[in-house]
View: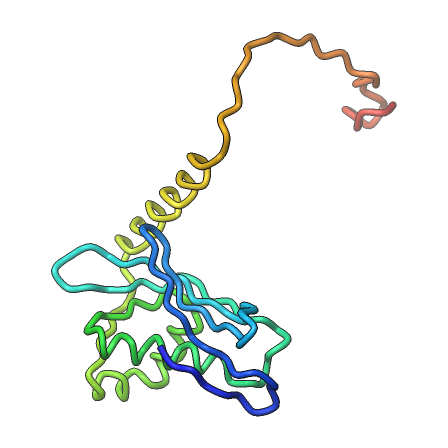
Length: 167
C-alpha cells in the first residue's frame, strides 16, 4: 500500500494491510505508528478471492483530512491490483461504491452486493477469532461448589405489587 501526506497533518500517514486467519484489516497509521483508522474484512473461500468488508472506524480527531477516502481508495486500488472482488457490508465502502462503482469497475475492479452467506462467514470468522483469544488465555482450574444465597434485603410485595429489593 502507499504512503500519503495529508495537508494540515504534521506527519504523513500510511495504509497497511494486516492479513490474519480469521479477520484481517487495512489500517491507516501515522508515521509514529498511531492507529488513525481501520477497515476490517474477511477473505471468502472459493475459486476467486473476495474480501468482505464488515466494519470501518476512523479516529474523530482526523475528520476533514480525507483519511476515509485515502483508506477506501487504497482498498479499491488493492482490489484491482490483487484481482479480488470487494463485498461492501461496511456502510462507508458501500456508499463509496454506490457513488463511484462504475468508475471502479471501468478501472478493472469488481464488487458485488452482500449475501446472507457473507454474514454466516463473518460470524464464523468472529467466533474463530474469539476462540483464538480464549485459547491463548491461561487455563484456570475449575471447581464445583454449591452456595446457598442469602439476600440481605426483602423481596416482599407492597400495595403496588412486586417491588425492587430494598436493603
